[in-house]
Image (cartoon, rainbow, N blue to C red; front, side, top):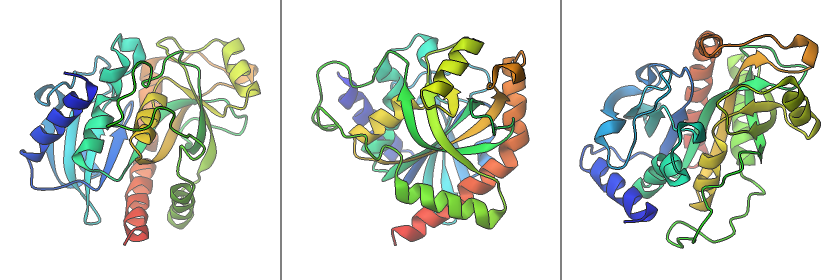
Length: 278
C-alpha cells in the first residue's frame, strides 16, 4: 500500500466512526492543549487508533483527533502533529493532512509555536503566516508523484490563501487581538537555532522560525486544499542581543499564555470562512 491508499483507509475508517462530515481541518501545534475547549460537542479519537497514524513523541502534542463544530461548522482538529526530527518519513508526517483531504475537508488552518525573528515581535504575540521558506532539506512530494493526490508540480503562489488571511485580520481587529503577519522559515530541528542562524533567516526575509507546518502546507496544496496558518511567537530571536536561553518548557508556557487569544481568533476565523462560502 502507498501513501494514497493509507490516507484513503484512514479516511474511510473515520467516516465509520462519526456521522459528522468535517468541512474544515485544523492542526494545533506545540502546547495547543485541550482542543475540546475550542470545539463544541467534540468527540475525541486517539491517534493510535487511526490507521497509519503515529503517537507524537513530543509531550506537548496531545495526539488526539477531535471532531466537533465551531459556530455550527463541522471541524476535524488534529491536536498534535509529527515532525522531521522525530525520525519519521515525510509520508508519515503529512499522512494526517492527507487523511483529512481524502475525508473531504475543503481547507485547513494550521497553528504552531515559532521563534520571532522580526524585531517587532514579542513572546506571546500572534502572527499570521503569509508565506514560507523551506529550509528543512526535505519535501513530502519527493519521489514518484501520485496523480490521485495532485499534479507533479503544484503551484505555491498562494500557498496561504489571501482571502482567508484578509478574513483573519478582520476577525482579529473585531476581537481586539493584535496580529502580526509574516514569513515562516521551516527548519528540521530539534535544536533551537544559533544566533547566526536566526540572523541569517531574518536577512533572507523570515519573520518567524520553527520546525513544522511547511510539509503540511505543501501536502495540502498538492491536494488542492485551501490553507491558512497562524503562529504563536514563543521567544524573541532577533536581534541577537535580545536572545535569551530558551527551554521547551518556556515555549509551552508562552503558548499557554496566548491560548485564550488564539482560540478566540480561531473560532472567529472559522465562522468567517463558513460565511464566505455560503
